[in-house]
Length: 106
Length: 171
Image 1 (cartoon, rainbow over the protein chains, first blue to last red):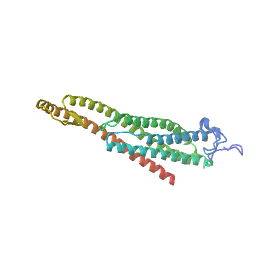
Image 2: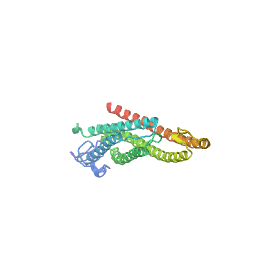
Image 3: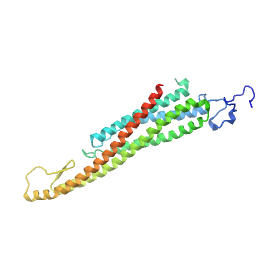
Image 4: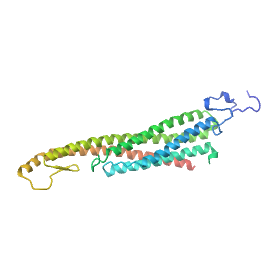
């Protein structure tokens, strides 16, 4: 059954109040890329991941462990560098997600 | 304690603690992101966003797992280094009492003129002290191998995850 003309419906014909989106959904925010509480909550969660990843990448590079032998020391150093790089990759990946979510941030 | 054999257990423990605390922080953030992703999964209009979020979560999972595993390995390693360093200190005392000294994990005779009695005392004590030193060397070797393995595996896994993530971004 169709609703009143002009009232927003999902592509499948559901009224917003029928959607199980919980408290963060607003009628005037039909998708997650539309500004609204749902997008804002996701943006906050993603921003927190970016900030943590960046801070952690810097922090791990600041450590100078002394393992007492060259082989173990090199393995630890390689891991530290790779961990910092993976954290930077995480920052970049989340930044991409955020750009798609909030195009005005470009 | 810093010496040529056991390194600095404190610095290894500190790095291990940092890895684990970073992993714990990311786990909390992952939980919130996963919850929001699950809610979006039911929304057909959010398919592209969910795909992006799933990729972020996969990378997060690998980073968390490897930071935590390496942190644990480094903390165990630091504990073993500290125990071995303590055992070496005790062995040094025993060697000194027998007129010998430790060079790394080798029990050696110091330079100098000695009496026949002291020479005999050293020769009697040296094999047993060297056996103790060899046991410590083996223990140290095993700890190093175990730690190196976790680090090498973690490095490879993180490199693969970072490459996959960046390749995806280029598409």
